[in-house]
Length: 120
Length: 112
Image (cartoon, rainbow over all chains, first blue to last red; front, side):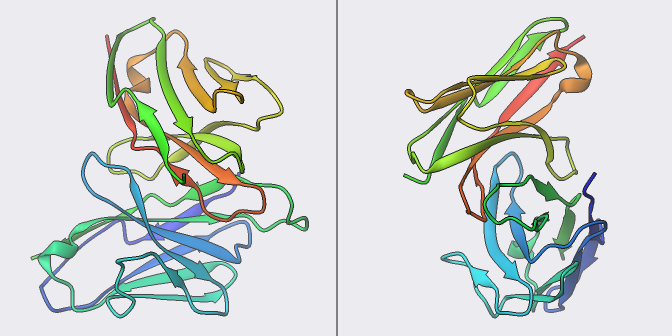
């Protein structure tokens, strides 16, 4: 089955530093990947849509300069939390959808295992 | 119109019982309805999904019931087991759509 690998699974950093999170589709190509943020006991909040070879699309209220997204290949998207602060501490999850030759049909969204970010 | 409502927020079921989680949507353009299961500290995993051309889909102990006219769908977990204890999210997406709209989640606890 389709596997999405997210790395690291957890990271602790000091306030003011930047953290990069990687999301890889291991056995399929994904033109589009999604980045979510999840607070404890809450649902997934879409932060941005990552598009291979073009700029990411950010949801309202998400700072583009704070959360830098790069989707340089069909299997890799990265999220960089710049100048992290304690309020950025959260569970970040990426997902990807397998590209198919036929655009018409929905295909499952596969999630990575998430990254627990703690900013001290 | 983009929202997906989900209930209950939490659910406690005895081992062997039936767990039922309900979702409702408003946007009739949605045509793909998956359920995801999430364990603590892990990403959501696809459990089962349905399209509106069928009213029910069953996979093992998991069944989705779909009511297109009412714009509602539900997840039934038969013979619930303690290992089923997790948070369940319903979701919806559109034809040709890219993103999913997720419900707020249901925390299921199955007592041994």
